[in-house]
Length: 336
Length: 304
Image (tube, rainbow over all chains, first blue to last red; front, side):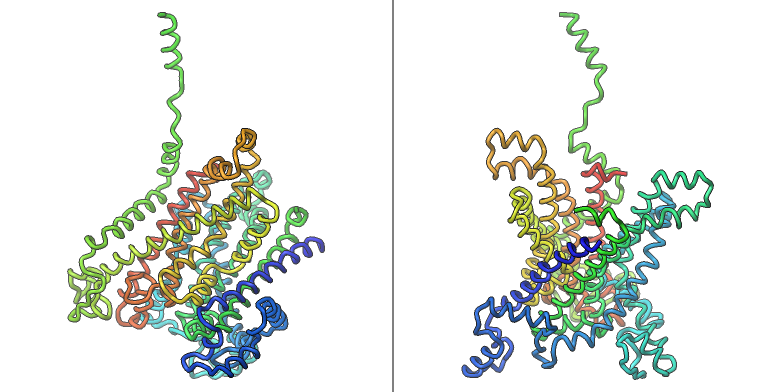
């Protein structure tokens, strides 16, 4: 087991180095001199240029610059934002909980709907129920989620007035930032109605962000269930006279879930990149909106740092999924 | 003489019906999938629209009718049949803009898929054929790209190169590269151990001939499927970039950027928001349906 984890861990290091190399190169691909870009319209004098260049290490050879960069990254130093002058890491940490909260709610939505839909479709294979689940999931899979967000907003916020249009909470509430998770913070605070407000702000963004993962989970659950349901041991269980629901839930689902869990883990990338679009539409103050705004402001250290962190999160989650998969399924663990 | 003719006729009457050519067999399986055929029809319609946009569209996509701002679709009260799907905030005909937008989406799809297909096949063939160090380097590179969500990587590339259609198309072709490399490499490795490859090698075929003439044609099936699905993600990513203001710039009639322009009119004019998105959804859905159908028809192993 340890050997498996170790082998899997050792594969992560080159990927991590590759990503740092990528973000390091990206920032140097910007046309023009980095210091002039930082200085913006005003420009800098020759002496100040030389000073800044020495300060930021741009006068060193490229490989030295790269090692410095990686060294900084490993210590959590991602540079400072050009606009706010705050460390990128600090800005990231204040905004990250909002994205995590949204992503978790979206994932819960996707699993709660996608999993049962996939199971039903497999059990009722070939019926109208199966066909409609598959049609819906293919539509969800093809959905431009930024449009889906606008459409839901149009119906539920503008026309029906059931949910708020944007943000995390009504402006009338002032919630102390304890954990950064609005749902927990509002529960901790004694302001009446703030929790309901936070929940109502979360509903539409979670549905929008969860739509594509939901479709993927439903499709995967269906095909995995179909495979398991055709196994001999299911026929045996049925022949023994076990109740049909018990065969499906206890006997089939447990084995069918293994590939589904992997697929759920792989949705983290889709969720995080979908968060960029969802947060932009709903004005959700998370890292997606932060990244897009930084691109607009040409705040390159933030763009560089943000992309690096998101990529690292995805690598770590994929690693955890792989290891869990190895624990659940010994065949993976022992294969080379 | 007579006996021999007799045997030949009796032999003829006994033979099975002529086997289907690969093309007929493909069509037989493909056409049995109704969704796939529907997807094909929709794609054909959209391509027709894109090619003949100038003739099909009732108005020019950039003409501004100042007396018809934010006009609702024709079937609603206040609508006008010369603007079937209504007009936007500066009085441009939405239908005409959608029709011209299909031209952009389809051509970006073609460019992005072709570019990543060519480079992906090359890298995949090299990795699969030579193995060893080259393979490790290429596949590490592919793994790094796969660790990033495609939209994020595309955003990063466009952020650096500057927002424009060309850069967006370039970014989309780069991010879809890993899938083609992986598929080609896997297929190449599977084919390499086949007898026909060994015999060509024994006859004296060089690496180029082996790679492109012997192996490549036998790896095409999964690549065709991936290319079709690649079309749908290229169109979706292009629209997302356009929506974020990183793709086509206004006043170009691109579906995603049309949506971004319409954001401020969500409350007043639902049609400005609804139709461009519907167009994206229909197009992407059509490509996904056809991709699924192609996979079923080309890959007998997946047939249930």
